Amino acid sequence: MTNPSWDPAQYLRHAGHRARPFTDLLARVPDLPGEPPRIADLGCGPGNVTVHLTERWPTAHVTGYDNSPEMLDRAHTEYEGPTPGGGRLDFAHADARTWTPAEPCDLIVSNATLQWVPGHLDRLADWTAALGPGGTLAFQVPDNTDAPLHALMRELAATPRWKTRLADVPRRTDSVHTPAVYLDRLARLGCAADVWQTTYLHVLPGPDPVLDWVKGTGLRPVLTALGDDPEARDAFLTEYRDLLRTAYPSAPYGTVLPFRRLFAVARTGR
Image (cartoon, rainbow, N blue to C red):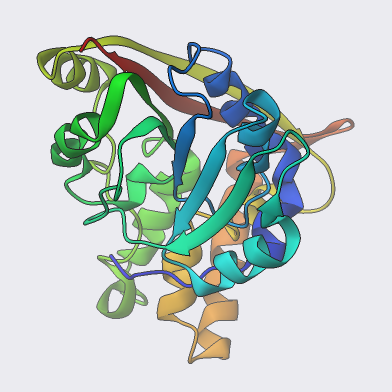
């Protein structure tokens, strides 16, 4: 899969819908042991949801980590600095494939990131080991690679016109594991684990809103791979748009995008 480039402005076009799973995840995170708490947000993006951590834990030192310079530039500019509750919010470059915290954390949280990290299941042991006593690992990932949104992208990329350039570019169907796999792995690591799924029915306004949504996330590898060929990029987008129009028909009140997500909250027992 192509390492995608990111566009914070495009990503934030649906910021409200994208933030809701993060707030739902945080609602299940228990009280943290540290005072002030030390929190890491792995895959923080432009920082717009990372700031919610400072609202839940006002005195916390929160660091958001991401590997996208574009996302980090936005986060530094908009959110970095002291927080109203006496804590601090900062951001740093890191790659989730190799990152471990320099000091024990009370909470490591990751929002819609691990689906981009091959082998992330094996990283759970490193992250839970980096938690202090009573610390928590919490994450959510899109759990919908079987949805038309992704299936149509893969099918189109595998057609004769596109397969040479794109066949292996879209996100793979095995990029996220089943809930039972995460529960088993976290429990065997000695955590009290809570794992669940939720399907959101996002009602999106405007013309071709599902295409607009996916241009901020799942389509980024394709857009990156075709970035040096605007004509080809536009041709792919036109074909994909037409497929999405059929799969997600509009209604008088908007276009419904069903979106399933997987959540996990794991608290260490030591």
